[in-house]
Image (cartoon, rainbow, N blue to C red; front, side, top):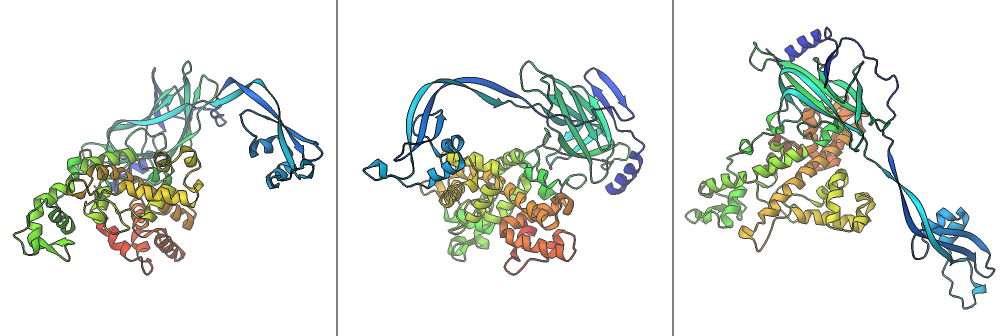
Length: 544
């Protein structure tokens, strides 16, 4: 039976079900009606630790040249001259502005100097209290009776799916006292470990809000989840199965790409298409494609002996292999293109970027030869300086991890946009260097360790592009990306952003939306302007 027909039939019946069965650690409690959870929202985290520290307090006077008139007194907690921030916090605004604008005094006679000067008056031991924010309570979501599938968050459940909410108290000597929440319009309350039996949801999913109270006296923040439960017989009409998708920052099951959270986009019922899937075993990523460009590089590098072929098995100025060269290189080509599969799978599991998408992208960009495609395109995914800029700007967690490796942590503290122009350029060049596997002293001229490392970088680059693509959709429509476009189409838009840039994607989205067209791939790709047309072929090659 068609999955959508089954879904509609079960959805019609689901109104007969009350919310759930709530099962605590001590037993089962039936919920056939709304539970009297707290009428008001929880207070939220409110926990600090106050530490008393000893320091030396320095007292300075700011006085006026010539008259020695006292302007203000500064008390600071560090050695050396007061800095601008000290003047700002201890003196009046006009005195602070005068301090910033005044010129150094070069007069021999101090009475002729203009402005003010600083003089150390006293220093003495002192104490002050430092408030430290403590980690708040959390709630994690998992599923029971379900087998997770590495295709976004989709799980297949052979028994009634059970959503498990687990309270976590990070502070010793305290504990989670209860969990409360709302599933659509029904409230619930249970202990620190809730097990909620999920009814069939609407096709667009159902909303869940939940939070935890702690014996510390506060609560967690309010967390949100979008949950879809869809029935299916999976080819076996005698047994009931469910597809369950969960989108939440608190999801502790199969990793979900962070951009999917931002999109609020559920995959198609039953999971996404193969090109957006991640298998459980790296062997499932194996391919045997006769890549001409890869074959030519293996011949030129001496891995393959094609000397019996005309022109040593090469055509077009040695860029691609001839038919004879390709036959000679076939086994080596198959081996080479699959050597990265385990690293691709690991990167996919760490980031939530589909493994098949990553592999297809490398095939399209470089045919798995991690050298320099041109002077500006580098590595397995052919990273450019514009691509590096997107990665560092639109993937802040990656920037925060990468930046301290190449420059002072203090310079990294304000993010990529906090760097000056030369700092941003240095970061871009450093990132390109990290994925450039060309190595004159390495076997075959390729540093395979660097190529393996670069796979994770390209996964984070895809996350950055899908974040930017989602923002473009939101800017054009005023809605979240998941409400304006389908899951698969949003990934295709992200590939356009990766290949052709946000200008091409943004213009096409705007053109389609202004004509009141749905933001499907077919509609948006028909609106690519001159110079952007190659994006259609690029995306279709990766997604086929």
